[in-house]
Image (cartoon, rainbow, N blue to C red; front, side, top):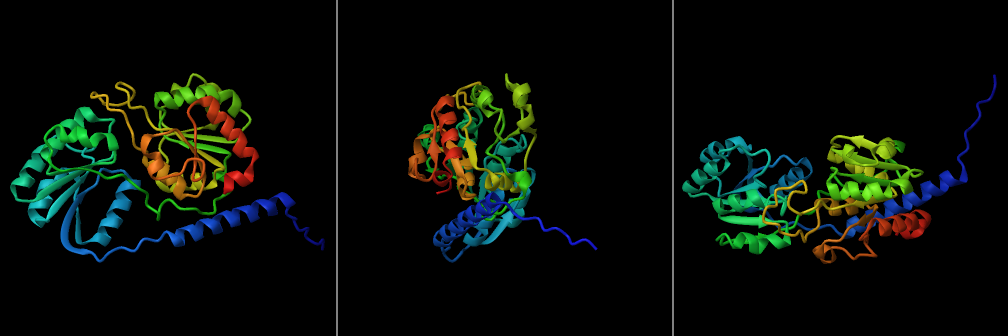
Length: 333
């Protein structure tokens, strides 16, 4: 019988394995130091109405379950019915857009008549001010993840408006070992808003010899679609898969959506966006190097040049991609 030949790993494989293990070990150490102690839950019955953003709703539900003694979940269509049956101390609605029925506000009015306090948390601000400017007036309390919308809602006579930024679900987005199909040099996951296609059209000649993933909807808008098509995965990627791609990437790009009226939004009040998006938190939670465009409150949560890096143009983004792909140590730290 012929002896089976053992496949010897190349020195590069050992090196990559060592660096990946070191990175994951450092991430685990940071996670252990960042564990937050949750206070004892309050004796309170809360009703939560999800928007249908799985990555957000799952994390919010898990957090609320630790904060209140009883959490009731209702669909947008059955808010009034559920509230009348359960009689919670308060109702918290997530966003109130997109999937909510036409009688959304009528239901909220009737819930308030039952003596139940109502709150809404807008997490798509300021991209739908045409709608949220109406919705906000029907709630007792308004929360917004957008710093620039607090005074906006107050201007409509809402007495209780609070800035409440989003964060990340650490059970969904965290550093992990990934299979080869998730390993890319550069990853961007999101829909093809016009500012994003303009950026990738400029980058297209540079990206042609890189291992790139561009995923999401409407990427046929690209002027360079034929050139970038091999890198494009059309359609929605579930949050769990997104986390795999983030963890397996060398670099993840974050491009905020445009706030200008008519740019794939309903921001008829033309409010500029000042706050970072959920993607900022999710990429960082996976322990991967992030290159992001700048929003005003970025510095309140991250240290540019230390926790992540920023860019202001396609040229600057290309230069930083090139630098970090060549300087592995700086990218991993």
